[in-house]
Amino acid sequence: MLHTYFDTLIIGSGLAGLTLALNLASSKKVGLITKQALLDGASGWAQGGIAAALSEKDSPEVHIRDTLSAGAGLCNEKITRSVLENGPQAIQWLIEQGVPFTRNQGNKTGYHLTKEGGHSVRRVIHAADATGQAIQRTLGEKTRTHTNITVLEHHIAIDLITSIKLGHSNNGNKCYGAYVLDNFSGQVNTISAQNTVLATGGAGKVYLYTTNPDTATGDGIAMGWRAGCQVANMEFIQFHPTCLYHPHAKSFLITETVRGEGGLLKLPDGKRFMPLHDDRAELAPRDIVARAIDFEMKKRGLDCVYLDISHKPTLFLKKHFPNIYARCLELGIDITRHPIPVVPAAHYTCGGIVTNLNGKTNLGNLYAIGETAHTGLHGANRLASNSLLECLVFGQAAAEDILNQTPLPAVKLPKWDESRVTDADEEIIISHNWDELRRFMWSYVGIVRTNKRLQRAQHRIKLLHEEINEYYANFRVTSDLLELRNLVDTADLIVQSAMLRHESRGLHFSLDYPDSQQHAKDTILKK
Image (tube, rainbow, N blue to C red; front, side, top):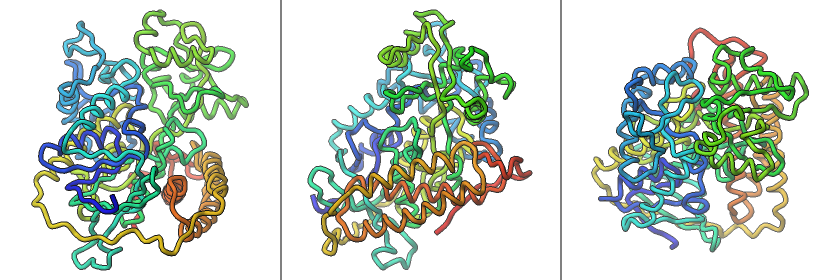
């Protein structure tokens, strides 16, 4: 497959990509590429659930109010209203697909709803503590067996093919497809499409500690930026307050629902500390809880703090948190008897490629959906469990927009040219640069920032850019090289955005600018 065509090319196989594919496949030929196996993205790691106004005690208006509050003045109210008003029907679509949400016959909805930080009522529908996994399995099976969807596993996109790159941009910059590396054969394929959709997720792996899987390397954001997309609010990286702290527990998240169901954060001596930081205590928004934990750890020289829910009945914990219970037990931690050691970790990228209500970018024929996109829903801090809802609603909106288009003739695209490159003589530079990047991003561009730290990070990013660009120009591409290239571009966008925000707001906290400005503005980067 050196050159092929699809009506729609979807890059990424998380909830956003799968939702879009299934909503298009009745009348479109869809190509879906994924870096690893179909279900290996970040969506499958989501534990808590999906927030939507489903109960008689809730309404879209209340959900909107909670979201705007968490977003610290930067949510786009029009977008927020559109997404949250469409929440109940999006959940109903998942139920119709067969997603096995946890039942509760005592609830008028028929499903158990839980509560997380920043929410004023119970509105998070879930499948025990493995919601993302349940959704991905259900939609993934339908995607894999659909005759109009071609799934290309172990393929990684290199770059988008645009009219500017082809030398004919009289009618503005448009996207015509992408160059894609087949990791099995090492062959680079040219895939052309009427529409291309970036649904590659976030960029948590730019940090040393993250709850994200290894696939979260900012690919879509970096590719979109290089192609000419506008990017916004990359300084707002959400650090989840509670990642399991254990040498053998790589990237294992302890869902916010544990605190929603009564879990308490404690110091090693058993004392609570959250009431000293916020009146909402453990149920404060994530940025407040993460900063409080970071403060207590640095003040007292701690490696971690503790999340204690052992006061709840054993049967309750095993029923509501079966995966957390089992994983912790494997590591010698019985959550029915002992507190869970936790630390904050990079969790969610609130910024991304700027899109409209339909997921369209400023490039013709190019969409971005899910964590890759900046829609305006999350503002300066994402409200817990709004992210999966955003994937659903924008996946459906993009599908509707694409289905209403008049098809255009395919554009003939050039093959990938590797006539002037050779195989790399050594690849140690990639692993060294990857490690260096993640460590200085954690140290200098983490939960608390300063001008000096950001300047140090920017200097190191410039040096890495030079090394990687030289390597990219002279050697055949590999998956590791492409991911590193995307991570460095994404790190650069995060630092650029952080340096432009001269205030503290939401997830961006600066010791040099501790106060918020009167008027909240998005940080928009343009080529």
